[in-house]
Length: 398
Image (cartoon, rainbow, N blue to C red; front, side):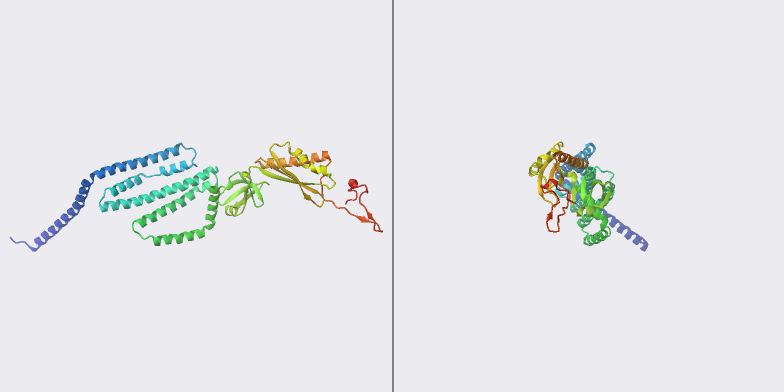
């Protein structure tokens, strides 16, 4: 029996296909056999590692559950306890499983391919989980500060969504670069490109970012808060709103004053609301004809004017010098009130009572005067008052 050339070609093709199938089966069987042999050789380590993995996953699950319950039962979201609980609550199941599997693969001498696979998987999920944790931590701190300000309708509170986007982009961009770097990709060019792009964006939006950071600085550093009375330059007013770009004050004269946050932080700001007491100074002067004994009793005289006000403590009533038309005194006292209207109202009443007491005692306030001296044709001085002394002084005054 003879075979034709066509039959021989078909047999050769069938033999070639059979050889390919056998090689494929052998390639599959060899890793499978090696894996099976590895499992049999490390059965004890795998069991121990499995138990450890279950324990780690259980611990992470407990921490995540505790975080969620703390968030549900905690009315104060501004505390560090609530912030950390929010971070733990964002732990993902994928991170737990891949982390524990990677730990088991390392400690059981897994085949190189298996260990490499889980190592790469761990890097990816760890970078992503780290980005999630970092985002929640940063946003938690910022949110707690805004809540602490008790200004939910402020521009800062409304801008939290923008801050969330910026923080998320930054966190996941860093995670993406870490992943690429650990899987063998050269990220130098990418980092350089991102740096150049970031500089360009920063230059283009430097005004917006400077105002945003200034607003965050006010929220974090808390030089003042809503409701405080502050003095900025020549302006004194009550803080009504701390916005993303500006801070608005209600001036003591009634109008609203709007100041840029960046400019506000560049100059000295006096927070009057943080003063435990206000020091008030009232200068006054009496005429030179006042008797020295009256001057010696000036502290007791002025103290009688201040005595009815229990929240005032006199520091000093002293003679400060000799003016052109008066003997100058100064009353200095501390007022423990934090209400500016009460402070200035009390100051007004003190001034009025001093005037009443001076009138009762015959003490005269000094005011600017000028005395003219004239002489006769023969050069004799003509006095502007009778020669009996200073009692009639004032008749020749102009």
